[in-house]
Image (cartoon, rainbow, N blue to C red; front, side, top):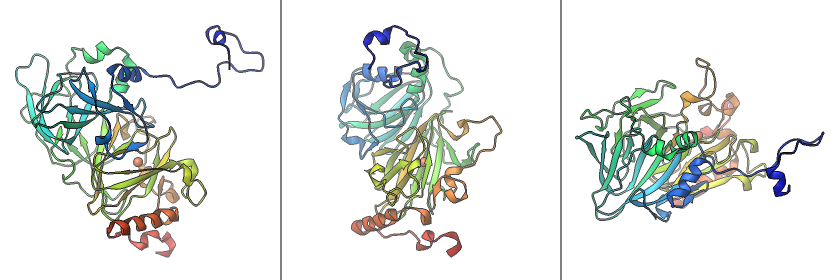
Length: 400
Ligand SMILES: [Fe+2]
């Protein structure tokens, strides 16, 4: 180890040496400093079976109790926390120069949204399972209508903005009004059910700033992750924050597929588990002796898991083990498919929906590690849930 003085005085490296310390610690970002300054804890792991289990600590600036969440692989990509709105109370009014969406974990209440100087406010109601978005830099106040605490999960682009601007006043006390993200029209927070193709990949999209019940709303057929898989991506308040709601049928599981980090899967309904492992371990990690490096999380409504805990591409695979379908919402921050690297107009392929033997990153059931199917079948028997995986899906293409 170099002496302290070697860290404060520049020395050119000797002729055959390389400059720098060689090894060094990841530095806290401005967003890490912000979380520290807010005075509530930060939960860091691959996931948690239920965010209701996180201890809530008074968060003075917000007027509630909370806990930051930064699952592995999402650092700097987007921000997350749980916050409890006090019984028969409200959070403090705030505005901020970042996007924010909320999922109601439990409770019932209202949210007021307006622009500085407005006399009229949007007011809408929410309950467990509601999802809504606060437009960038709009004023808002979250009110609890019940005599017990209401718990909300927030996802935002705070790390992205704070890490770039690094000035809290510019983020939390900025007079700019985004007329392109906010409207005073009466129907601004009216839930819209109409579905249209998203402009990038042609998948089902809903333009709506509020979803009253994300756990039970209609989802159109998608079929990309498992047979019968349903999915919609809500597009809210002109956000860059990208997310979708998807559902695996009961008695079925998704194919594994690989990509880099950003996505966090949050359970809305049913129960299940997720496996995630680095792509370099291959498509059969248990058979090849790497089973100890596969990470697993079991979760239920209110639980969440990171799809790719490390920097490189990780496979992840989701298993529905309850009588009910397994419904997830996946949050990505501003890392939406239209923002992948490459010049405008370059041909991009939905490679996570294409099997590895055809050039994609999805592991078809017939190529997967035999342990996956054995364990899943045993788990369903244990839970008394019918297995709805078709044995034909496990046969290689030439055999079908
Ligand atoms: Fe994924």
